[in-house]
Image 1 (cartoon, one colour):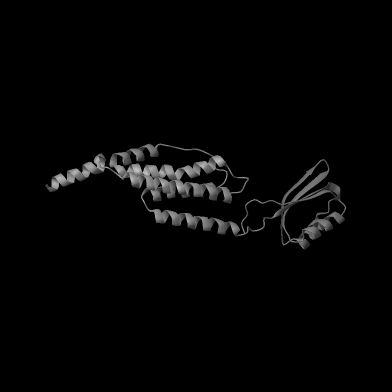
Image 2: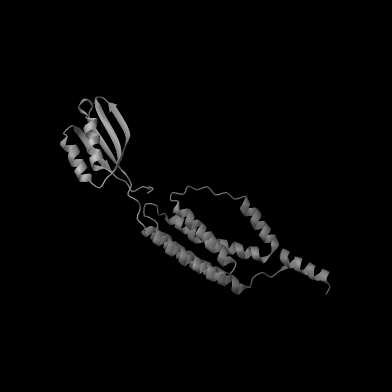
Length: 226
């Protein structure tokens, strides 16, 4: 057989005449992808806060490794399928609001697992899952910095002694910053962002002034930066 015939046979096999992967290999890849899908499903369910948990989102993430692995199997079979897949996927656009930024991490994890198992790198795929699980749970154990609180004070405008108020606030808070001051219908509403470990003392001293209609200290569990 001449070199020309060898090259022609190789090109023919690459374009579409090859047999691709064996049935046993395909079943092994899809089985491993299914196993990882169930694993990611359970990790997502256990790690995501209940306020953000969506079973539909979890099922979508869990199904991706199998779908991506199947695509990788098809792309390895011949060149024509590969080009067709690339062309089809390049024109697809998905638009869906992501409530929790952590969902993006799980999406990339699922897609990456599908690609890795699709090319037969089983050890790498399982190591990826173990490392991601440990990393997620270790990072979740690190406490957030305490978020500042909002002190909301309502009083009669003519009775408001701002100097006395800020003297008490500065004496009990390591950080404070006025966020808003509103005067309407003879009443004043003062909103101050504070960070303190002496909340009880602060509220007690403000209450002893006997000039406030209402004193509120509002905390939240939102994101904050140290």
